[in-house]
Length: 124
Image 1 (cartoon, helix red, strand yellow):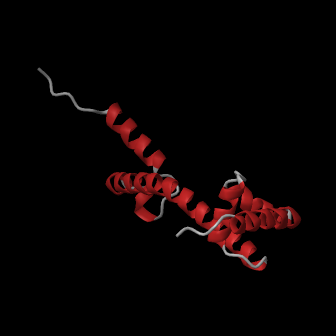
Image 2: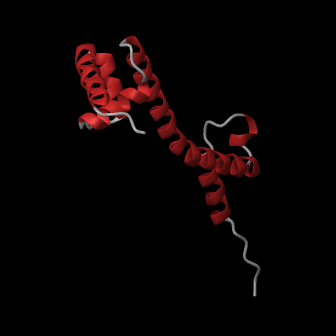
């Protein structure tokens, strides 16, 4: 039985791998073995950072809301608790957008949240 060599299949696999590594720096887009490692690492970073991006955006929204609350003389934690007590259901992304784009509306939200937090007796 004759020995079978990969031939075209090997060339196609290499071409597919190097296509995925297009744009990588140095030998990472030229050499098969370096490209294979680079593509795997890129996939790991991409998977991890798709989740990290969500955390980073939430952190940004909270920072913006905190700054807007400080400008209005209240704290972030009291504001969020007041929103819950007042029954105002807005997520942090929307609160951040409102604070930037419509400061008067955010003032009204802060006033109602602070009023709701003061109306309830403190937990003992």
